[in-house]
Amino acid sequence: MALPYSITNRIMGIIDYSIMDPLIWIDEAVPFIGWTFIIYLTLYLYYPAAAFFGRTDEYRIREMFAFHQAMFVMTWFVNLIFIIFPTEVYIRDQIPSGIRNGEGFWGFWFGDVMHVTDMPYNAWPSLHVVQSLMIVMLLKRWKAIQGLTEILTWIAWIALCISVMTTKQHFFWDLISGAFTGIICWYWMCLPAVKMANSEEWKLAFPSKSE
Image 1 (spheres, helix red, strand yellow):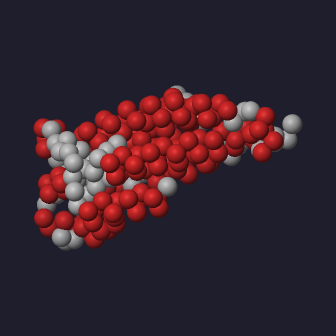
Image 2 (cartoon, rainbow, N blue to C red):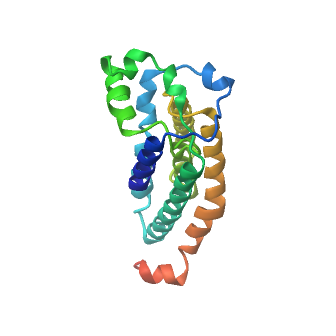
């Protein structure tokens, strides 16, 4: 999923054309907070979490593969939105110029790493929000998170959503459209796919020890 994202991101960055401006007051009110870059990177803990908790038995293994197939299709669909509705995330200008120029500790991570590898496009819906929400919903379905663990997971997810704005990687519109897309994709794509993972065709492909 990273490969088509990167290719699309580079192409839209080269074209450098924006079809809309989703800026609202909250995008200017939310400050840039450099250390939330760490929270922003926690997205990459969600991917292995889905695999880790999905390996416990043959039933979950089937559901895990079905889920990731649905998420793969969703990601391609979102990449298509990036192409049809290119939107420049120009609020990076709200980041201090020294950091954008690579000065200091956070300047290295923002100016020399993130801004070099991730062009200010592929804005909405935010894949950070979409994919992480779908994975949290999957863990909730598996009851891999319950009670305090579930509360902490949702707090961590909300923090991740906030970080896409405090790092100036996304507009508020990207966050909201990402959450909406995540909910839609979970109930109309992932959940049906996961339920179908218990069909005879899937059982033949991934038989349990008792079958």
